[in-house]
Length: 143
Image 1: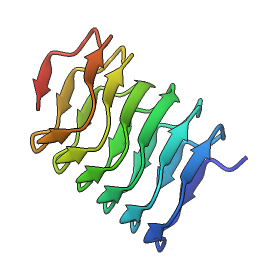
Image 2: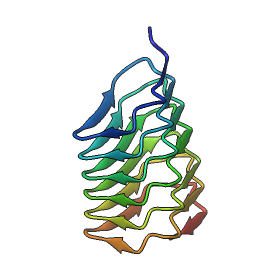
Image 3: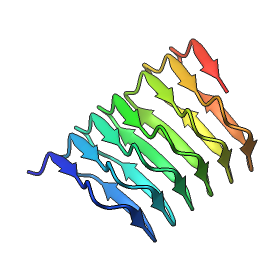
Image 4: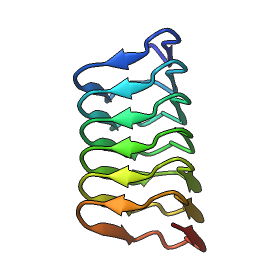
């Protein structure tokens, strides 16, 4: 089974970006800068690392959830999400979104047993609700 997927040249996706329910352990998109509609990465039992270091904008929702082994999520230049922003039910210990400035709809970060730190220091605008809950180990929150 395919366990690692790296797509170094892909720079933009005009529609949906959806990768679900695979045997992947590593997902890497080093050149991806924009997605016109939704990003949906979910239901990966073995996924430990997701990296899109150049991703700056998502036109729709950004949804990373139910990846039981996911311990590393890196989207350091993500600045805007047009829809909702949902990071739930992963194995993450640290969530850092240093460039995230705006979310068009809701922010939902929940159900991380090991999450100790959440940081989004540039977040200035959320169009809907801001909901952070059921992260029992969370000791540091910087928004």
